Length: 612
Picture (cartoon, rainbow, N blue to C red):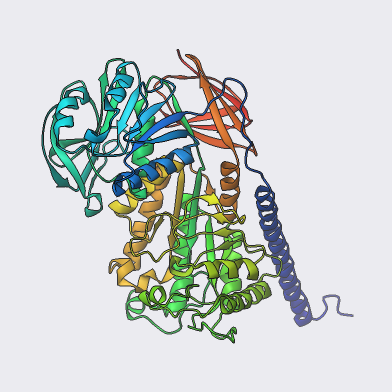
């Protein structure tokens, strides 16, 4: 009898066992992934049931209140006023908005500060009231440079100005202080900063926060009596891209009191059009540089580079899938041109590395019925919402066929265009989908679905993206620094096919683009390492906690006491103070910049001790 048996049979048994073990491990890993995913889903369901906070705070706790002065007859003044209102809303501060003819006399000292959003100071009937308010200890921020007229001649010395000339156009900002977090010493020169400033000189007692071309003061504050004026010598703060300047200026204006406000604290990263069918064939540049066809390049070069960057710089990707790249906008919709094997391969690796899979669409045709909008970007308009819903039902069938236990929560509109019909179709085809991630900043072509961070009235989480692309330039740095300073959010997206579009890649190679992308991530990590890396679903949960709470504070010489109404778990705040941090109760504090701290509250009541 042969005690060793048949070697060939033994080898087959061993190989079969190894394969079976691999399958079991893969299944267990998949089950773990789906359990984690569904836990996020359950958390998101819970946060959608959170109610808006009711009015009422414990005695002694009051939210900061601001006086907002604007000119209702001037379009730019209204735009700036609305931008300030949104900044205050995100900060959970309250305000009274009055037109330039209704400034109270006297201005109540209970206001934290007054903010003026008009350049026509001569029409402010209560300008003298604002002067007296400052002299007696108040604070006024002029958020737009004045017109050169009689009123300026009457007040300019009180603002710390010794002489001034005519306006000129500047395209430069140099930061002397950290108006934007970690920006002190940074210089920006670019067309996007085109700004009308007054040529002027300040006295030596002013504190200059930023200058522009020819070292002209751009943002400064000047003591007057027992209070302080702050002036922005420009005309650009009505844009969302500059909200960090507004937030930073308000936090620096009243230095006698600590300034504290909540932030969402999230670092989000999206890959649009991924997973999706990569084109077959070769690209001459990729073939020459990497010796691979398109699919092999993305599998063997691009995807490993992207994942290495995620691991190195602490990023969790939310990829949004496309089933096919056909141009159909009318039924029937089928899976022709799809790549389920690629979805399985890339999707599982995305989930295994802590990421998320969302939906981009059946194809890349934006859910838009207006021909003018669709044709602008070379798309076909849809006839109606019913056809959109049918196409989305097909991608639901396709995605569930590959990941039957996975719940898809996030939708990113192709080219960031989304109609109301499309929004309704998404909710019908994907009843579990709760998040729409489009874009945050204004679209001057009026094509994009522009969002604020909020939970909409229908329960959908509006979770926009702030920046995009592999290139790291001054504009991108400006946008991300402003968003982080004002709301504590980094939200960025890339496309795999940026490599083939000279309008999106600057005619650069993948080697150059990947280097710039890593520079972007390294910059963010080095300056803002306190941001929490999250997927879209986890970010939506944090957003839900943030919007369904209200906050108020009371301060004395040695304590900053906070109260969170509608507390749903840990919440983060930015604290700006020049006093040393002391004993902490129900919170932790991290120093993130000069006189700037991240406060993490563990309970609804928390206390930050400070030196007297």
